[in-house]
Image (cartoon, rainbow, N blue to C red; front, side):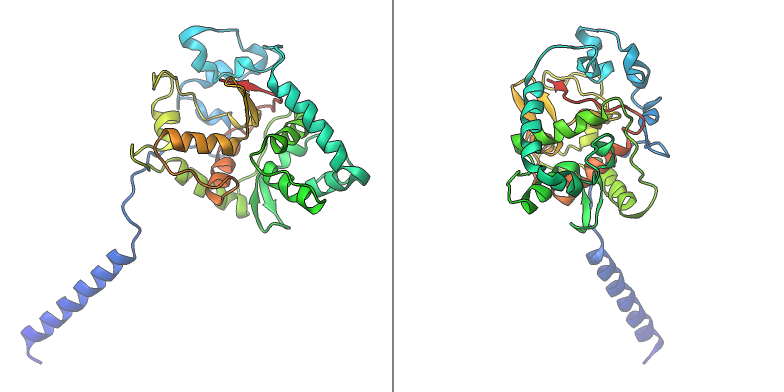
Length: 293
């Protein structure tokens, strides 16, 4: 083989290698990257959306109205600031009724992670890696699983499933979220969730972060998006449109509104976002039942 032929052959091999690497690479996607705090927690919102100063201490939340409400991430709606009876209270009663039926002989509590029947702090153990289910799950997914083992059907995202979730969560009221995403499956889930939260998708090319990072405090379709920090401590919640919603149901609603195909409730991607947002709520107290518009 002559020298020019050798050069041409080497060039051809290089081009083939480049083409193969391009073919194997992920398709181009756009992201909205945020300045996630390390370690994650509500204090990461300092200087990020400039709202932490307004809601960092629930006991000092003022009763604000009008254009400044977004600064509080609607946390002023939580008790003790708002003692209004709403649909979340009825859901709590329904959840208690269902829980007591399921928990004959303490089987349901044990399955949920409270073998002694004490529900205090149980909500704070979720999301978690579940040895039985072999994946990271939120509490509503575990409720469906445990109810199924006992011969009952409480589908993740349903009213009754969310009602049981609210009832269990009330035993953790006032206790701060404290999910550890520093290692293992939860760390992997956190990083995936961070990526999905910032991934642009759909016909309007929006990411979760497009609204909850870039548009915080601004007008968007008659609404004012709030910060995503400290947001996980009130789900499931009673919506002002007379609907009890779990977090994953809200994800499907957000997807529809932004032109994205909704995923299955309990899917890995939704659970990963739940882990990510839970970590960004570390340090903020639980509140159930809650109410949001």
